[in-house]
Length: 288
Image 1 (cartoon, rainbow, N blue to C red):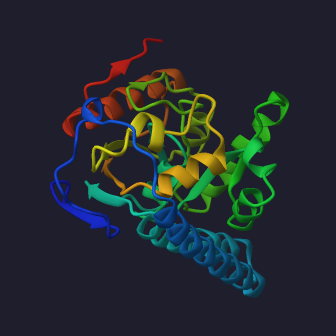
Image 2: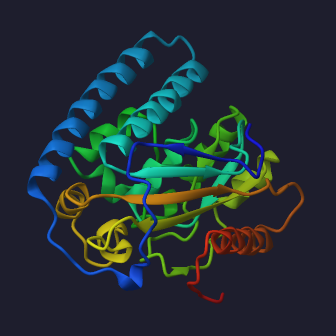
């Protein structure tokens, strides 16, 4: 574990001073840059897909299978941030063991950023699983599917989160339930925090503060995946821009045993906002 005051970097993106989002101007992404990055990212994804399938095939226990899934998820995402031109700066102690990670959420780039920092299990939505390409990749790494249309199946998803925590694996859940443009932090939903309380697992607040590296890019449009954005169109534009950087701040673990899940959700959210402000975030908060 690193000292909480230390900062490390993942990725090979540029390191120039960031440009405030308000000062950015839209610019068309480079098709050549997007194509080159896209080819490298696709090749890397294919290699990791074959590798994780092979590792799971040789696993003799459920614990070994989960460990292989989390290991290859981390390897894939660490390589993905480099191929996407993203720079990840890690602050604080990277958690290990059965903890619930609770970050703010802008879009799929958050998964790449967090997954490049540590081995963990992610949750995903049923809509992602319906995508023939993304769904196949996500399924191979054992992501926990959270249904949005059939709320009756939410208890099953929470049971799988509880199982992973009991197996000693970190689980990352975006408790806002949706993504934003980065200018706000929505109220944290408490349903999945119950899994941490039931297992006595700590909840770790995680703050993701994205910056555009050049005036050609805008966090709220080119990095954040929300509103009416379409996945492949958005990813193509992101790959064609000169890149973004993100501060990933891990807060101190918050004990969950014998706590009220709604009160704990509010506390975790307030810690995430405080961590964001350490990076210079000056967004809006939405009251409960």
